[in-house]
Length: 362
Image 1: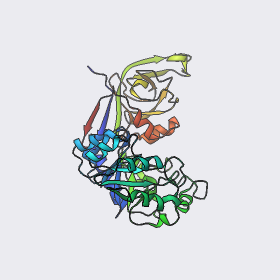
Image 2 (image 1 turned 90 degrees about the vertical axis):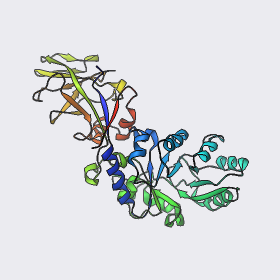
Image 3 (image 1 turned 120 degrees about the horizontal axis):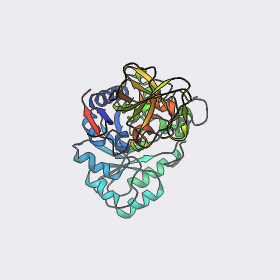
Image 4 (image 1 turned 45 degrees about the vertical axis):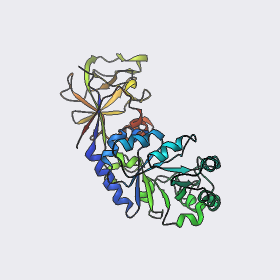
């Protein structure tokens, strides 16, 4: 029998989240961000679930082909652009669009022209300082690109460094300051994509005719201070396992490698089939919750390669074989991430290949 751990993808939740974010987008087009294998949920599953979206946004070149072969017939955007000149063959072969974010990219296009209707988007650096042209360079960049035979400029885009309500809007690289850096470009209502999940949800002053939504499609809040329940999105992944052993320990007894946990009372310690080789973070601190029989129980001791230990002293009717939810419908991954001092996206993307994935229609 296989180990009991599994990741269940809730296809109905993915669909409802996409429909919710399409309503949030209003009259704007919705790019569904499916990078990192759809935030760990599976690109092919995202293709099936995100029919409400107007396009997919990817990072990896071969995700373009994957999406097309999975049946996606709408727009696809390569968000970080191409890495090598030969990448453009795949972009064109599968009718995708491409971001241009530096002069080197322009030079490659000039050297390879003419193209068969290559659609490009100009990335602007409004304060993130990772990719993009300075806003004041945009007119010349647009003119240069439009002069390349077969190239069509679809519009501009930028990425906000701090779009969450948690971030003080008058501090540092706020959305207000990034909009100010964009100047008149920020007022464009056509051919402009500025808003990510947080900006789409909470910042109506952000304009444009398209939005790029990532984390919220998967039921995760963009701001840890705003619960996902409050924005009416549903967890789309449940990571679950079972108790495979139980130890009764006395006060003074220790558990696991390094004896990191020592009991201060008579305790029941459950061994759960989930470890860092499954993607559950080794540095998960003591006290991080799991959900067992309707209550939360704390992780104790160190996460090992194949197992973790949980204090179930206060959990009723626990036996070998009792199901354990590591995160999901009852215990949201946002809450686990907060306990670990990280973000939900990291946990979702860390699930390893040895964990079986299954689908349901919930």
